[in-house]
Picture (cartoon, rainbow, N blue to C red):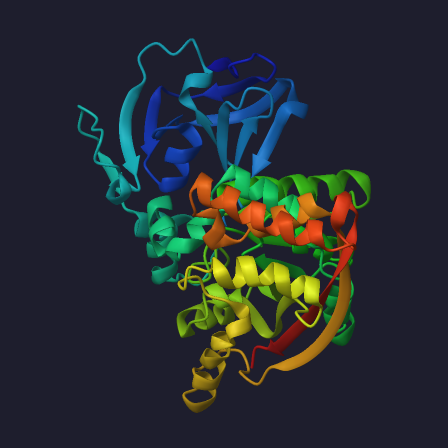
Length: 432
């Protein structure tokens, strides 16, 4: 029977054939977030045709085997589509003329939140593992620990370092965008040229933050980029950066920005050619992270880790960092400058793991000046994880102390722009 449906705002209109009024429910973590509840779909859908507003249909690449469609104007969840078969699973409530839809199946039944139940019994009830076995690509290697880690957003949150939650905040995100410097593009082009990487290889930015380094990956010529970042606010900023690049200078850029951690990267085994980590590895410097990074890298794939640190040999720089890196340091947040992150590579040298990266890191150094003023410098400090966790009164005190230092120095007084020198260290290696 031919059916007509539409999104909430009416800009997207669809027709299709529906053979019956049987429907099913998905309880997976992505569906629950996407639909603000379980995703209820109609079965037996054929010949889907978007008769109006197809330009408003946007796609979200939600897994290795499926993508989701939504209206970019009103946000209505439209469909779930299997990549290989192109089969549409349409949202039940697009169609106003359903007479008496009958619920017959539930999937990801083992992931159903405890806050709701359906009154009728369903004849089909499939677990997460059963669904993955049915629909994942045939060459996909099931990694149970990955799916256990990624099954719910609450698990992601609980696996974060407590201080890293300071980045899950809009004000911190804004400060990060305004105050953090952009690392030299040469860090990306050096890796690209050294390993003769084609622009179309799969590049991944792990712990991508607001997209400052992801932007460099795109500007460095890579055309297929994934950015993995646990902070929703940072992910939003990263999407904005990449969309701007796509619209202004690189229309053939393909990108995805997704939730994930260093121990649960949402990519298949040996699917990534080059994996960048900027200003972040010290947050997750564990064997478990190295094993997971190695899992997604192809044989011969490149791991590149980059850090930019202020040069404290300059008196003004030291006076500033003495405040927010030393005086107000919480003693808990991992710091690159401590060098503790290197221990995991030393451990791997003495106790190697199979199919992992070469723990013998190579080093390339760069230098640059960050041109900023007093307000930007204060934003730089406010974007620091442990400072983002402090009270409003504490932040005001830190801002006051930083301002006093800059007001006393003729180079930075009266709101003048000044330069802070940064040392950049690029450590790189390959999967053995």
